[in-house]
Length: 76
Image (cartoon, rainbow, N blue to C red):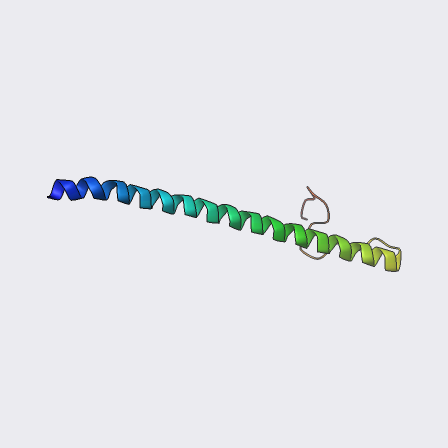
């Protein structure tokens, strides 16, 4: 009887593991996309804030402390 159970259990276990791995990959992908969306929103908000300051004062706004005003800028 044991060989019959083993023959039935192995495909079932394999299917459960494959489904679990696929689910984990999909969750990871969704989390990565959500993170990218949040970064996009933060960049848009920062851009709008600088644009509003520039319109009010006529002077370019200074970069926030600890932030990067331009890509590739080196920290001193």
